[in-house]
Image (cartoon, rainbow, N blue to C red; front, side, top):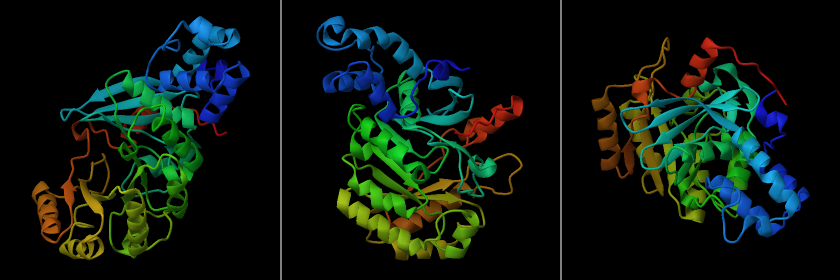
Length: 351
């Protein structure tokens, strides 16, 4: 049995709060301990002598409790890239693994599920389907693990999984990171294929994250083929919902567009994007495909991608051409986990 489960480490933040209260924690104790955990401080850090600040049962339990939290996400391997990114294979308490990516300029991409049910045809994560949900504490634990390596002031929920399919846990993690975690709300980025539940729930929280929408094409039929189990929402409807959220929060929507050679990089798509997004409170992120061994998809030549970005800019669409972090280490989403699984089978445990 893993250390996390042997010690009964809570996978969820609500469970962690209950554990602290059962040990005698009041609101002040609880908030200080959560802040110390998320900000990588010692459990007893803070003003005054800890043994006099905390109730004795709580104080005596702190070393074991923080050890169990540390076992929620452990580093299995690290893969630094030339661009300053570092892809991390993260072990969970039940033997499963997920991926996190330390990004240049103090960013971190975290996973929200083991696997994914959306089944995007160009993404390795979804090939095995959804194996299990991550608890909110497991999501936050990826941030804690990353902060042990470098500063993290921005967290994007764009790793393995579809955040809207694990909405309660993701929103609970966002709330803690945007409060005790000290991360600015606009620097918490919720990425989704456009699930209506996300549009309903995100405006209601005390921490309202920025929103990234995976668009990938303006053609409804092609989108259904590329994202076979995404909600059947027309691209125009996704953009309308995104615009409402952008105007309500004051954060521009980030539209994600994975560029696939000969599939969604044509002039017809440029024209349609311009019609959809010109005048919107939005940023288009063009991301050349991170190629996977044995895959049929290819990323377009860089000059073609650059021309798309220039053409959209001329048409009034704020556009950024991005390089997928860590391409030189073949670390596209799901690739590290797939390589590790090929070397050593992972036992699948469903809750």
